Length: 281
Image 1 (cartoon, rainbow, N blue to C red):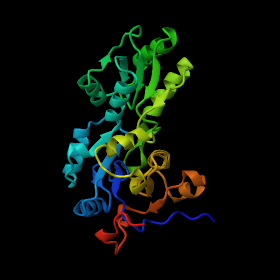
Image 2: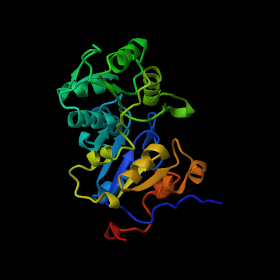
Image 3: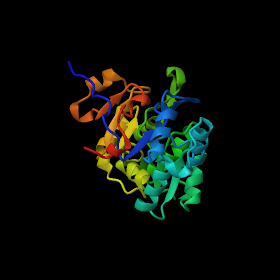
Image 4: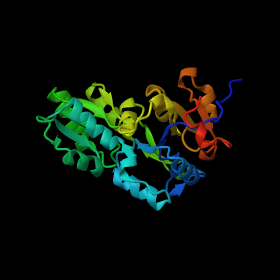
């Protein structure tokens, strides 16, 4: 019978953490989160936080972590809002964008000088995201820009099918919006930004003099967090407090399995591992 990978036996040079389902669930910190982050910071090991949720700004994530007892500067937060903004500036400079999005992403585009429009004859890029205000009017604009006028490409902020809620409930996420546009236009989404795209890991590690191979990506989803670790050349740690469970790990193909599995964040730092062993092995 296939067994799950063991917890880490060493410390790594930097840690990237998913948020929902890893650090907290709803308004509650998950067990061990505060203690582990405090320990890593006391050891001067860089920590960064990643989120595929474009409905919150980096400031909102910073405020939430601080409110929950983990004081966190905005500079330690990387979300698909920032990753999508950078991607557009790099790959479609000067483009006019139609964001199917909530206010944080719209505000980020405005701050970056990205032109937006609801006129299908002007739209170059349709950006689909997790948008709880998605409606038929927005679908029609996207349809006209992509299919009728044959001018716009479709990109997405993240690949998630749903956003989990405490208690097991969730709500449709970006993939549902993308599916509606693809079904009506017959055009495939050309780029999915956010985890597991390795560009978001590179953005999070920007300014840190660390080798990705000596960094750990910690999260609760095989399809995004663990896949990001693999694609970015990092160690991956699956924490069993969110989406994926031990059965999912055992059923996964070898190349889709994490380097380590922990029941909770408390197992992330091995007992007896001192600061002098950081980066060893």
